[in-house]
Length: 61
Image (cartoon, rainbow, N blue to C red; front, side, top):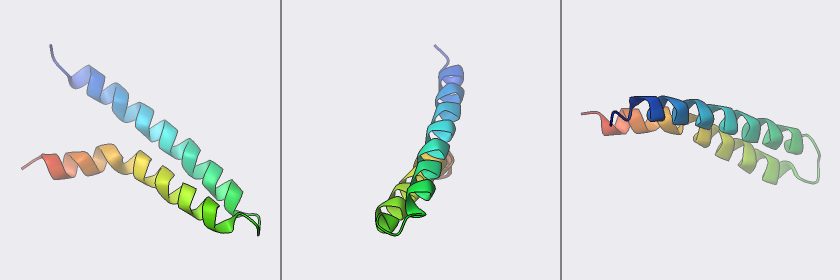
């Protein structure tokens, strides 16, 4: 079985989920009380969204 369709669907899903997590973190970081947690969540969302690209960068020779 060719994994290309599954990989492209997973790539799209990770981009969308990462974007939503990042936006939630940035929204949370607007408040003074949860600023550090929001920034941490935004960074995690960025890593989720960038993970397919980072994996492709590391996995290919």
